Image (cartoon, rainbow over all chains, first blue to last red; front, top):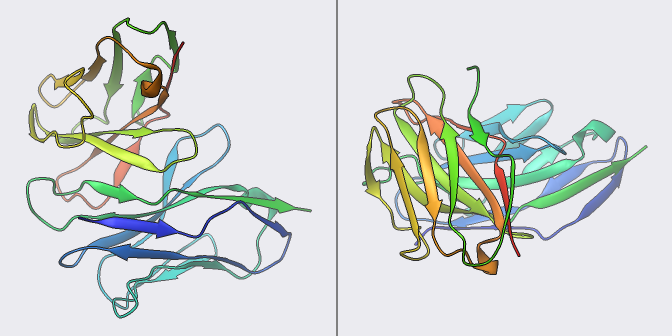
Length: 115
Length: 113
């Protein structure tokens, strides 16, 4: 079945540091890939997505590239801010079948950014 | 409303009691999903609705769990005879026809004592 593996956290960085959160996946067919973010006290929000190989999703300074050859979708940001402190989830979406749209999530990575 | 809403936000119950969790999706969204997030773990899929039918119930952990949906509106997740391992945050999400994005509610935190 489908699965998503994220780097274990928590990750603690200083403001303006470079961020990478690794994500690899196992899936049949051609899934779409997502990063969701959960800020303290808030619900899950879509951060960015990529629907086919070599696509780059980007939003709020974050980027991730869909690499089919390495089955990866690593999240990066060049300069993090305190306001980026949150839990980040990598996810994939089944392509077709009876659960079109169902998401499979990684375990989440807690990011804390200090001033 | 503007987003997905869930109620209650918190529920504390005693082992063996039944609980009902409610989800109000975004108006017009045909797809509705329930997920569970146990402490320190990722989200687990529970059930998917398209309209008021449920083509995929494969994530429901046991027959103590059931869910229903009224048309393309409210959904209720029921857990009978709750156990301590049912303690988790239960999240609902809804999506439109193109399935490009799911919008999540704030969740219901269930604690079974």
